[in-house]
Image (cartoon, rainbow, N blue to C red; front, side):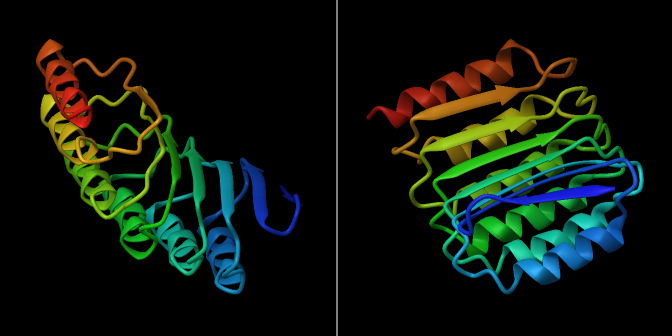
Length: 190
């Protein structure tokens, strides 16, 4: 069962657990297309039934929210892969005015450096990013290369005020990846 809460009209917040399917996200995406003045959107969903197709449907609606400033997508859906992150990239391409981005994909073990590349390419379109939070625990396929992609996209985000990255139990990320990120952050100050 989904429990939808709207608090106030410019802020959409939903929590869905367990039994939602791609069909639910399709209908939610269709409904979002009619809320063009929405400024904040947050959804947290956890379901073994959600796939990249459901995320694509949701993202097709979010892309129409041209006034959006703050987006928070958090999923514990094991079937989300690099293709799902490609759809999030498309949001960033359509809404370059995003100021706050928070993404979390727990248990999405199929996400690799290619998925990080999608997010990084999308971030390059964002013009006024102030906050970026990105959490992918148990990312067994993300390596230093993924952090290099992220580093490249972050170094031009001169308005960034908040950065939170979570790559717990990502055994293929080493000091080299964090050093690359550190070098990019130093460039932000110049």
